Image 1 (cartoon, rainbow, N blue to C red):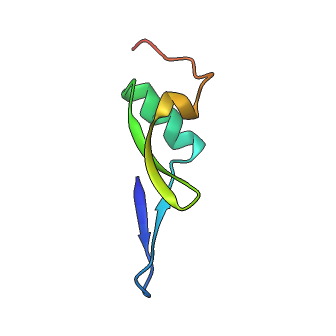
Image 2: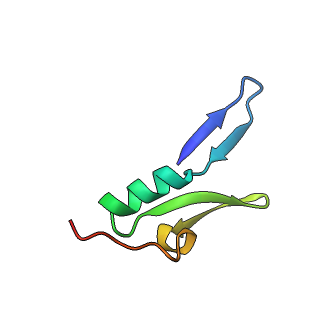
Length: 58
């Protein structure tokens, strides 16, 4: 997770993009990431964000 901190003091969660999500699941089979849902920030399993992901066997 990345956090954008603005000069005024506000913070915004930057969720992983599609390429980052693919790389995370390629090298770490079951990562959890922080995402925003409405006004809440929650941890979710990456497999929930990429339900059709084909895991590679390295």
